[in-house]
Image 1 (spheres, rainbow, N blue to C red):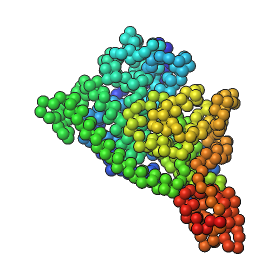
Image 2: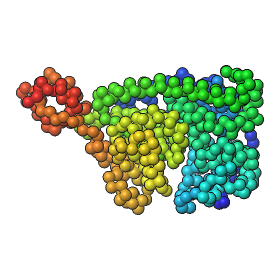
Image 3: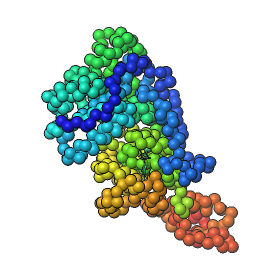
Image 4: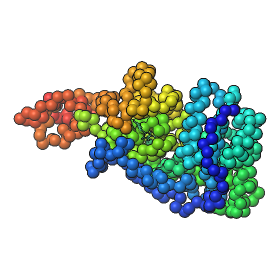
Length: 507
Ligand SMILES: Nc1nc2c(ncn2[C@@H]2O[C@H](COP(=O)(O)OP(=O)(O)OP(=O)(O)O)[C@@H](O)[C@H]2O)c(=O)[nH]1
Ligand SMILES: [Mg+2]
């Protein structure tokens, strides 16, 4: 095993306050945040993008920092999940990973990413341990002999939690916990926890809760011992909605409650999705092309959206700052309207439960006309990020959407790296959302790749039909236009419905 240097800090004293139940206002069931689903045009009073700070207006930053790291869960499940999520309030952690393939640099990068994830979840990372093995141990994840070593590190550092870099089985988690004697969680639970604390809209919160419950359900047996040991009170007495049926074990009750809640969440998500479907149908009817900004978490997607549209979305040097898609209307140089959507970032081994729970959000990406794939060129492994992102894109059915590769953070990346990336990806654009470098070129490239209206028309439109001319401006392309005594003589490319309306003025 190799160890990262200690990052210092004092011994952790458990805070009994942490054991209080969730506040009532953590329940999100009726909250709506229509704003985030609103694809409507830019705010006419929006400030000039260049007058904002380099990452755009940090409208949400204060709210984010005031968030408590408590998952918004309903009361029905409180006796199961309260315990679960209290335990996930991580404090002082030791990271552990099994390095199976790739170079030592890859292993270091993976550990650095796990550290960032842990820190984003509010943990203080004390130490990182990597073990090289062909595959994780079936019983204890790291080799059984190494578990004692881990225990020593935990004792020496005063850690209260161990985070393993992978998706562990219930048995692995339980075995490790029994031997290391502190809470052990895996990377999936960590990512779910970050999503839970960052979810803002009602839909986002419901999606995360669904993913958490799916995860929890598969591990109920593993947590069972811990639950009965720690839940006490209501749970131990079998209280709460539903109660305990005759002859039913605690495990069965928990499973039944989780299933009920999962069904409620699915129903709720279907409702929320219908709003989105209506708005999407409107965009499709108006034939507004849509561009989705996708990429690895922290690549600068939100910064780029702010740069391009003064959207004022949250930008933060944290993983998964954005969970809710934000759509903004914008225009091409020749005033064709299109939408740009900022989306949730991806990561290596994005938990499957999350991908599934976010299906309706991710579907937007699959339906886009163009993907702007933002890559952090200053990351130690941009190609690894590209591969991870494409894998998720394939999972969500977006692999066939045309992609424009954008290397961001050009101000930070080395010239050499940029040259290599450009050689590997000749059709890419290099930008800096921070300095604005390359963003004009990016706009041009996006405009060129937007779907083009399919019908070429020649018409002489009387001045009384300015409405038709406006429609060509926003949804079509003028090839030539000329003002004559009888009206505007034009050649243009338009969509079929507009072509039909122009038919009577055809020349
Ligand atoms: N130096 C530099 N920093 C940048 C640039 N673009 C973004 N950043 C920084 O990178 C961090 C992440 O930016 P975001 O725009 O929040 O990234 P994101 O891709 O939306 O991240 P998630 O929503 O968390 O997936 C922030 O600290 C930004 O200030 C850039 O071009 N140059
Ligand atoms: Mg973002």
